[in-house]
Length: 238
Figure 1 (cartoon, rainbow, N blue to C red):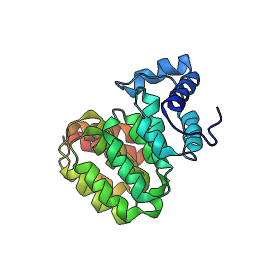
Figure 2: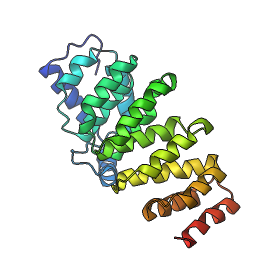
Figure 3: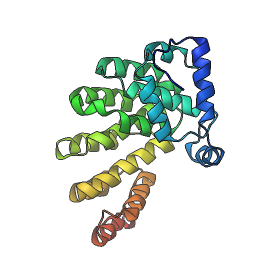
Figure 4: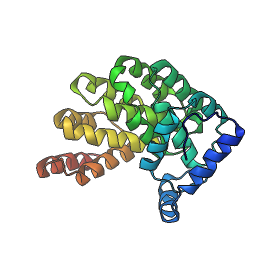
């Protein structure tokens, strides 16, 4: 479908949704439906295909398109957030993010958006304010997005203490929040082993978070056998 010069209205929006449905794969649909755990209908369109489509749509009058979106499928939600990730004006992009974030109901959307939101690299200080707002929100996927943004863009020595402080203060028991934190800690252990080990040992974190972090470290090919054994000792003290 050629989107060059398209004028977005109900008719062209419906044509886009029809085209989106035509990109689906029944085998991928069955696979993806099991893992994304979304309330939306899952069509079975892969992320690379959605990214390519979003890139094309971002060159059109995306503002009109975003207003028309009805979010009737998981893929339409991802498509909207990929379009937002392509917006070059940081303030505009984050305003759309805040407006639409409550449509997110899956880790697949938060994680895909975060890794695609490359504008963060040029706006790291501003994004820290956004992350603070996201993590302090009670909505599960706002929190998860905040932690995934830290994972994707802030694991460096400068931000270690900030990340540890957020994790230590987090009270959410939501599965997708705790899994994001565990993933974040496991990557921090790869890059800053001693600091993360000390944090895990002394911070009295939720048992689930600690166990999942240890499990993810055990699965990593970037951690030495010695450091895998070392982190397991934390479980003995629990």
